[in-house]
Length: 136
Image (cartoon, rainbow, N blue to C red):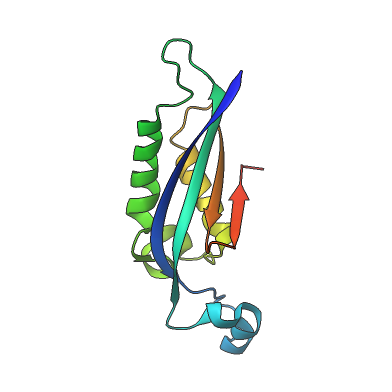
């Protein structure tokens, strides 16, 4: 029997949607106000959901404290109150769209989980705009 355990977290970060190989005009045309050269920020919310078999010994799929600590170390400490374009190595050459951010978050968390567990991450950039990724 498989069960999904979820943990919600948040971080605040600034970013600019921008391609270095495009002109400022093309960036503005494609990314509109999200390409502001002075950056802009979001209060991101994320939900990390881990699915697996219940361990008969502990009764856990994953100890929620372990999941909490992974999210804190890998995501909150790395992204919170940061300029993603400038201060987060994963985005030095990767445009920090919500789609790219959720994949980076997924990979950082998945690398810390036991191989038999599956993961889905939902990332809210605003209360109405969100993306999800499950490794597919």
